[in-house]
Amino acid sequence: MSFTIFFRVSSLFLIPTIAQEEGFISAVISSKGLDFTKDLLIEKAVSSIIPLQLPQIEKSVKIPLLGQTGDSGIALVASGATANLSMDWQYSYTTWLFEVSDNGAALYSGMEVGVTLALKDQQGTLKLSVLDCGCYVKDISIKLDGGASWLYQGLVDAFGGQIVSAVEENISKKVREGIMKLDSLLQSLPKQIKLDDIAALNVTLVDNPVLSNSSIEFQINGLFTAPIDDSVSCLDHKGLLDPLPFNVPAKMVEISLHEYVFISVSLVFFNANYMRWIINKIPDQSLLNTAGWRFIVPQLYKQYPNEDMDLNVTISSPPIIKVVNNGIDITVYSDVTIDVVDADEVIPVVCISMQIHASCSPEILRNKLAGIVKLNDFTTSLKWSKIGTLHMPLVQAVLSTVLKTVVVPYVNLWLWKGLPLPLPHGFTLQNSETFSTNSRLTIYSDVTFTER
Image (cartoon, rainbow, N blue to C red):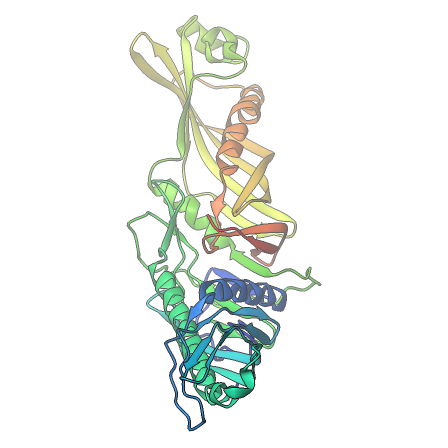
């Protein structure tokens, strides 16, 4: 069977498969996205085929004058399901009575090119193969413009079948070569996208792509790990991707991230001991001297008068992250140790436990998922003290200032760097919208393509 011209990446060309396992990130290409991809592939396929050089064609027939054509070159331009072709030719014949020579000519052909593709998961990468590929030239006519064309029109007509076969064979070959190059590119794509030296996103496929009447869905592992860690997650993630309970915008792609994706990146940084900070500079630097605490914790100033201080902030357990309606909720348990810096000696004097509740509003920054954290509330309790009992409401007021002016801005600066999203090279999200519900964050977006 034949299809519309070049690489129609749509349900007509893909082999249906049934997913057996779900990933933590789901990427869905809608019918709008398939049309965009099809048009892009057509453009790239046509540009790679033009010009198409066919082998020299020779043929002899029994007519009064004998001759042969020169090398034939064919230029191809795709427009819908047709192709315009041009051919250079020349002819000469000489006898003792007269000489005949001519050149030129043009021909037009209706043509269809079809390719049937299969997409499969091969050890975590996408394997692209050609199941069927063909080129069919519906009609071909050759018109000669020279004055003596009536003498050898029969000769050129005899070339029609060979020209058709050459066009069909060579275009099919070019299409297959293009698919092989694309498959080689897919096989070379990395299985991890590094966030930094600490964490990387696992972008291996967990199953074959899934075909529906109007979309293609890919299930991706989607968890962050240490860059050298290729281990498979043991988290239970069955039934994560239930249909959304509201009307969604008509976009090219849909990328759905389960809350485990965010939990995994926080877990990587926690295990790498990166969730701890020494705070020794704040906007109100007087609060990092015992003199600034003389009315808040008098005994601190009494024991260590006019000594510098720092705050040792340590996250005591991995943050609890929940994707809820309209955002992401975060609960953090941390310890804040107040240190007195006496010459070269650091003396821990007080440890305060904090339970922090915050919310995050996700935003799309090009091809990354960024966010802004807002402090909702927090509570404090005294864990231990070397300077006696503390008046905790006053201490909590000071820590509130530190959280709002130092910790939250620092976290937002890191979050604004963004988490990578699993997009092929050259594609950029555009006009994106985000929705969060039922333990997952979903991004609906159009895409653009720019070769770099």
